[in-house]
Image (cartoon, rainbow, N blue to C red; front, side, top):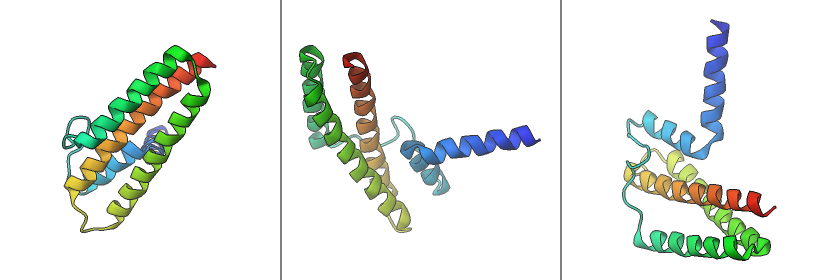
Length: 126
């Protein structure tokens, strides 16, 4: 019984620690399904931004420019923090539109994937 509770506490901690999992759990409390592919399609502006950053990342991978990589990662981390703050505001507003929250969650997923990819390139460079 104690082991089962410890596992539940650890899982809850992991959920709260990860912004995407936390948002999914909060949406579930609102009876809104979320998950990969359940968010509305990303805006064309976001898709263009992500594509441009991926091209820059590809160039950095070839040039091995760790300064440019650091700047790119910092830019995307700022965007990720901005989205997390917006999600926080939306979740604190009980009248917030769940579709808008799902849209922001989708954006957060894009930024998280990008940072994971950039992080693996950074590991290779250093």
